[in-house]
Amino acid sequence: TQLLEQSPQFLSIQEGENLTVYCNSSSVFSSLQWYRQEPGEGPVLLVTVVTGGEVKKLKRLTFQFGDARKDSSLHITAAQPGDTGLYLCAGAFGSARQLTFGSGTQLTVLP
Amino acid sequence: NAGVTQTPKFQVLKTGQSMTLQCAQDMNHNSMYWYRQDPGMGLRLIYYSASEGTTDKGEVPNGYNVSRLNKREFSLRLESAAPSQTSVYFCASFGSGSYEQYFGPGTRLTVT
Image 1 (tube, rainbow over the protein chains, first blue to last red):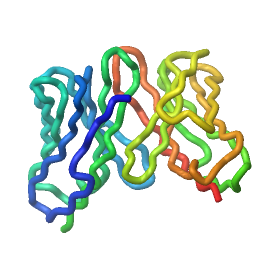
Image 2 (cartoon, rainbow over the protein chains, first blue to last red; image 1 turned 90 degrees about the horizontal axis):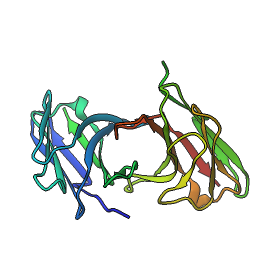
Image 3 (cartoon, one colour; image 1 turned 135 degrees about the horizontal axis):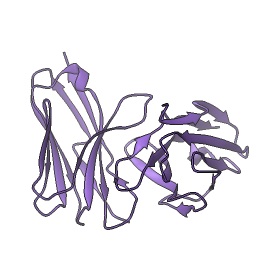
């Protein structure tokens, strides 16, 4: 079983602050996704990264894939209360058509 | 285009009772998945179906069975529910050529 560690588990910040969430594995990912989940709903895909060193931006969110494809980060600039939610990373390993999910980061942005 | 739908949304069972969770997708996807989500543990794969007519065990299959009824539908059955199966269950699907999964809204199951 591939393991995927996500940190921090909980994060509570003030509106306007910046934050970074990390996702790490000892194995190489084929691809990695970041999802956001709101209470009572299923996860919704934010981004997929495939190439080592890849950086993708989605408005105030910046996603980075490590050069060795073993780690990824999500950086949010000037967080807003609407960013509150559970952020999950999920990695695909090898040719397996399965995803392994991290345990999630519960983000709370206080107004 | 409803995406992935799940029924029921909520369910309370007594220990030993059985039930089936239903999932359907209208995106013509080949692969479908069942996950459970528990606090602090992310999503764990119970079973998946890579294509119509095939099913495989995931990380936590014990106590569950699945049926891929056709390309659209993938059901999860609890034959004899246990309190340890109290969780939120999500169904997901994706098509060929991509690892991007689309999730249903979830079923919140409580076993007393």
